[in-house]
Length: 490
Image 1 (spheres, rainbow, N blue to C red):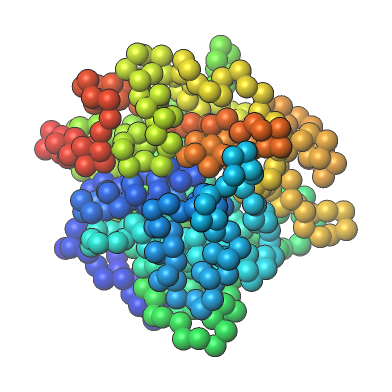
Image 2: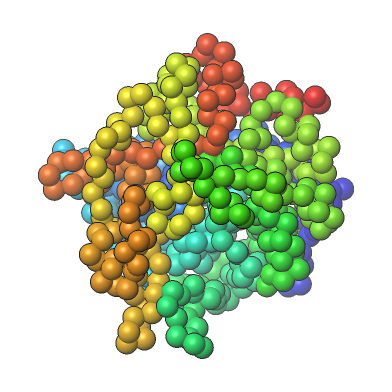
């Protein structure tokens, strides 16, 4: 038996207790880096394969516009249980011959507090497709990773993932205290609610996000659902303790993530900045007390610099169930990073010129964000246009008339300031949404023929991949798993 807590109480079908908790969790990376192929490769080995749910709705429609050449999207869409949805999305977005050279992708509307039924259904469908493909042909566990900060699509994404039988939900980049209760509601096809984080809110003004599964079935019978386990990604003992005691329902475990992990990092508690590099400086106050986490009595996994032989054994000795690993998997053959870009970064790692910078200004969220640079980086010295046409990182705010508007510190400065944003928030911001889409080969084509340059993020351990490569030019997810497990007894 494990120390995992099995939740019951009539909220959907309770999840069966697995005989063994996963030792390795695939980090849910970027936009489409941890895609269904990579999650499938990890899960079929018995570890937890995790798909990234970030902007997966736009990923799906762009894949369809490129012709879905292998037919994977359409194969999964055929199994989508809500009547008529897959057919409507295919009619609108599928281009059998792909896009003509230089032609831009047809966009979907940006996420908002109140989305149309059709827009919600694209989101539900996209999460279903990604999870369903990751689960095909094996019995290994599959999870989905979402960012708490990107609030507006999350309820629809959770429901779509649950329709596909997702086993775990992992969420960080915020305080996901309401998510366990939302999972309970969605497992019973009941309406789910989240409080909308609203900037400039008037005293007493409370706005909600709401998703009602019944609105989508139009009288058709909905299938029984199983509630997935919920793992909160935390960077402090305080947050873990709060979620363990004050969430809408108890969480099922934690991923304890340190500041060496890729993507967004929690800011240092002392807000210190290096006077020479301008990077955030982390200190003793940012080190999580693992013994304190262990005393909470829930399973936990250690993330950030964990992708090396021996780290699993260290985690187990500290009382953890295992480790979460991102960067090592990000550059394997099954990763969603575009092949040419992946090879270029690995060649740079071998040469020794790859660099990872913790940029305190790049992300419009205000969280530090790790950015990879290397000799030959196609984004080097390229002036990124200030544009906000995907909108996943926009912040809702209260307009003067009391209605809800949306702004992003990476949009054109004049637009941001006109919406009440502080001018000092705009310098050095980057459009992460467009840059991350380019990283997976789905960058938007602009009117002048330009394509948004890629933006690659990795953990601090990127430079050490040369040690793992050992002269190879590429490797598989299975190679990575075997390497990690090889040090488990160390």
